[in-house]
Length: 227
Image (tube, rainbow, N blue to C red; front, side, top):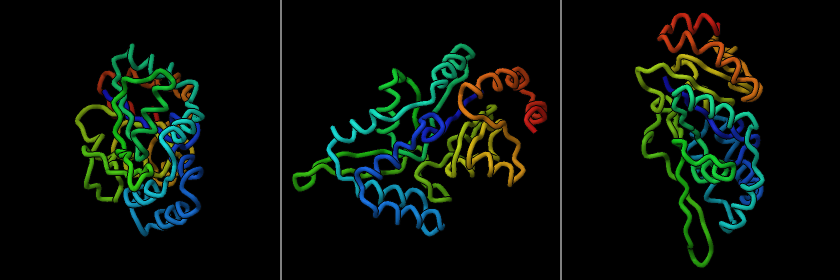
């Protein structure tokens, strides 16, 4: 059994990428965001163009990331998963450096992370940033930088935890979905079984109640519990 978890808005309280863009990219990033929301471009192109707009030193970038909070129940959730032999992988259409930095600041440094890859360099005397898709999930049919559907493709029982648009396409490809916000609305609209949650403190007892049947490999029973 494997747990996959989104980051921005799920583990983190704030969306780290949006915070960086709002502070350091000027208003043009919002125009690009609208093109993505209208379906004119995929999220990989959207993020690549937005990150290229960032004008900040690494020190200023890190100082902003220092203000990003994570869900206060996430570390208890990780502790439970560790004791239950449930591997947890973060799979995000966000930025790998942002995720690693924020988690490390909260003492979490050993989780596998699949996300878009940030490159930092000096060009013409100033710092610049570029973004490339995760090498393990390149070629997403929906134009995402991280193909979450490919990441979760496995014969194992899979649990997915998420909150937003980048989680839509994967919601019907796993055995158990914990959803909030836009992802919960999407699951309701599409008739996809899910367990709603507010935060990880709320999620953990629900997981504990459901997992015994999943541990025995009973997919049908698992779905009956969340329908």
